[in-house]
Image (cartoon, rainbow, N blue to C red; front, side, top):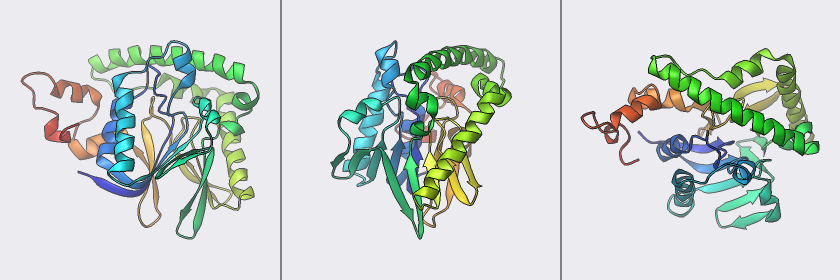
Length: 276
């Protein structure tokens, strides 16, 4: 079933990195369309591509879908630069028809205004100590590699997905403190810009809440969380998790079941998704 929204915000796809969920985000955007699509940074992972990352067909399919959004669906697409796709600084700002690339965007929703920015500029490590940020990115990549194999083991035993990185973030006091400080800084940005809300990404922590009277929204990521922000035509915002959407629309609980459906003798995934 197709659902049409006023706005969809996605961020942190990290295309080019091994752990990106490119197929999932393409599937999600095929069945959840919108008037305005905002890609809020770290869509392409230039850091990974400079090291051991690889550009694959599934990554190209994502941009083919985006071109389809712009040309056939007449959707307004806004690509905001993140720290992993900082190579875009060379062409900013860029505007061509319904497609644009920029550093930030002010979104109007009824009588409210939202300041939309990736958020890395308000992270002192990524903005001032880039070499430390890249070192941390290597550590995160290793953790995701361990996480992927650990969850393969869990899936074989019928266990649900477990995020090691999210668990570590929740238990390390400095990480919890960083998230709190980050959110506070972004709220101040919205207040200084006379905006009612702030929409960001960067920290891979989806959120929809109010801080000091400011609507704070974070779109999460498509590496682990697989989440997006949606705005309906009444101006209501919601964090949508891919796993919840998949189960609600098809009854399928996870990607492992999607793969099983592709096995000969088992019902085709087209029954659930059509031509994916």
